[in-house]
Image (cartoon, rainbow, N blue to C red; front, side, top):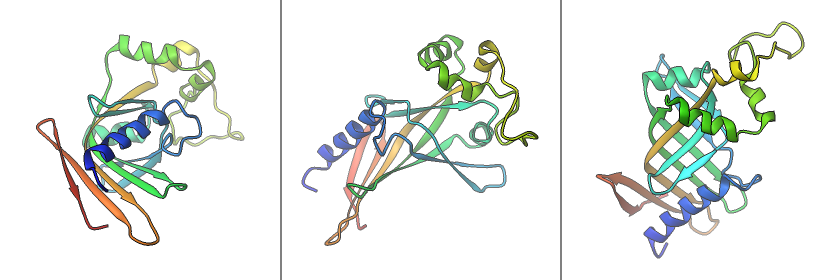
Length: 187
């Protein structure tokens, strides 16, 4: 790793590109929360937006989901991205914020394809039992919007690992007072 700043730039570039590249390996990361029993909960989400200037990652969620409750207890999110082709793993973490502004939410909802809106249309909360063959009553578009949530996570730590048969490489980036501290570390 010749230049850690260039590596950090490349990480943010890849994350940004994943939002618009359907089959990009970073498009569906794993997000970890801590539940009320102090146990880790892991879920796959779709990375919807990256703001590299603000160092934020955004995903959508059903407001009735367990992760929303988890974030109300502990706002820290952990992210895991992995590219099997390049054998690069990126772990990131930071505090999350559930968007409450109805105009901002409406803007995201309006850009969401109609087919994707069905993900928020179940009359039952995620994780509820379904009685009849994987079907649930669907809500109207207006009612579905009430279940729609946007989560923004401000990243303050990035741990990059490159697996290599000859020598693994690893770097740690930690943000303090708006500035990234960059360190090459033992894999």
